[in-house]
Image (cartoon, rainbow, N blue to C red):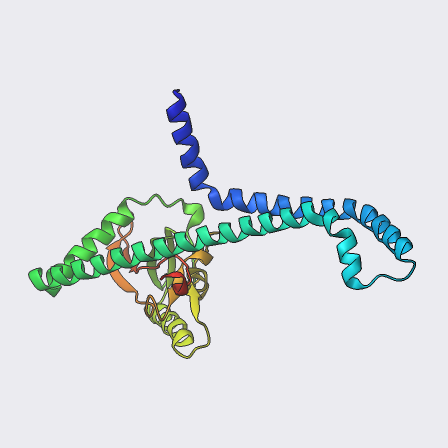
Length: 257
């Protein structure tokens, strides 16, 4: 490996993990600054005693600070640097979230325009046929272990496929619609500013994963939750409805300039 490639790779790694690195430095710096302050205290007390002995009376607050401030220069300096690292890490994360949100908005707009164009050019029925074929292909390409199949209710209910968790489950169309309406009502009424994918999963009975709290909807940026139920078939030929929807990453719209 050449030196230039090593430097380039190192810069890329540092840039990619800069929030974690800055946070680690900031936390370590805060701990170290506390230790330095504790170690400086005995020396500071001795300096105050000497200053008080020379004055032969109690020192004022200003005089005490003047007597000991040099002892705490390393601690205070390190605290300021550490705070800067923590603020820097937060700033990088905010900018990345804003960039991610912007990228999502652009792709969402492009997808919406693409869907509208398909309907205009081919007609509603043909567009519906295409959606069903795409949904079927998504199910066909998904390997779903039997151990992960989620059953909700009795066997007389309709089979559904949730594409993000890749879970099959049974429920009723009205149950799904009611869950969507309830979540949208919470946002519209102001009960909740943000609804996570985890909450949606809880409402429809799907097992959520560790990343689902980081996905969701904000009424004022993404709009209300909209889910299409596309007719497909399972591997065994049973009819199945795939939940087709878009869910963006969680972010604060206020981060965007």
